[in-house]
Amino acid sequence: MTPHTIHQSSDERFNPIAGILAYLLPGLGHWYLGEAKRGILIGVGVLWLFFGGVLIGGIDSVDRVEDKWWFVGQAGVGPIAFAVDLVHQTQFKVVDDEGRPHTPPPGPDARASKSIGHANEVGSLFGAIAGMLNIMCVIDAMWRPRTERRAVPRREASA
Amino acid sequence: MTLSLLAYTVILDPMPLRGGTWWLTLLPLALGIAVVYKAIKLDDLRRYPKQVAMMTTQIVVVMIALAVGFQVVVGWITPLLGG
Image 1 (cartoon, chains in turn green, red):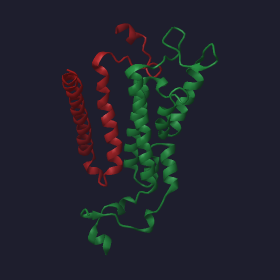
Image 2: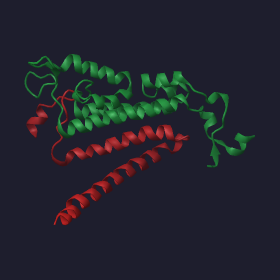
Image 3: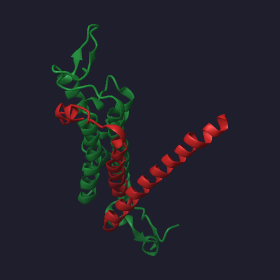
Image 4: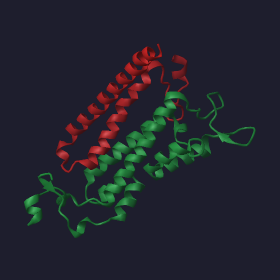
């Protein structure tokens, strides 16, 4: 046991609203729990990684159709990931001769270009890690003890 | 390189990572992971900046150590075994 222990109380129960808010916008769940600073740090970190991935890999690094398994990870960021994918699918894809939508290779007519190689790998990885970290934050927000009750010396906790 | 930079549109196009520069993206990746992880891990956020710096450094150092280890195995040991 560490010198500090978590004090059990009725305030430390399951909080689904905090979890939903944390998924809707990274950090919002902790803000709702009264930990604004922690919420801001989470939001900045998750969005830094997600949009860092879009910056490195281009908008093509978020693709629900062509990179399905990467998007499973990226979806953890919440509605922002779905919004970026929606913009990608509806605004930047072209339809090939067989009727399949895809992001075109670089060229004068391309509004966004296909992401390949290291840029695509790193961009997708940034987004997927952002999503998985945000799922951790959602879980933490749902079961997080209130701040003032987290680090209580053991003697006080047992009193 | 210059032409690819001229054609580059932020967000819409992938960043023109050339040669051995792509691995530098490990630095912002490690920083982002540490920022989020320590935000939920630490009870007392007064230690936060120091802990984030320490975890970022740990990730980068361990990744470099792994790269060196794999280079030793793949570049030196495996060719010796193949003989």
